[in-house]
Length: 72
Image 1 (tube, rainbow, N blue to C red):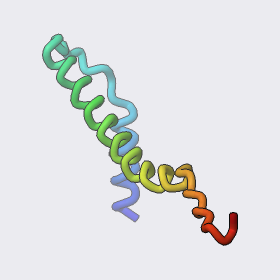
Image 2: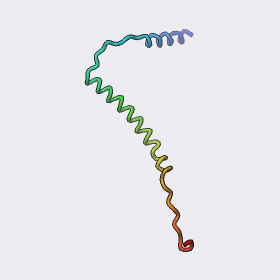
Image 3: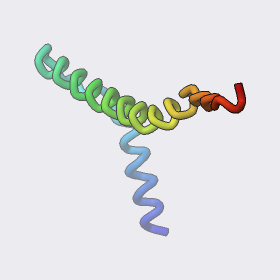
């Protein structure tokens, strides 16, 4: 029970935190944005790569069977 109270207290303390009053320069800002975009785009690319092959097989036209001389 004490662990639960400690965890809830910690969570409430995090939610009640004020602003940091910190300066983020252009280099750090662009680096952070680039890192976030890199992670998001790599996840999107991985999902696309996982689903691309089954979708390609699903929409691929099946070859028509060739007619033999007996059928013609």
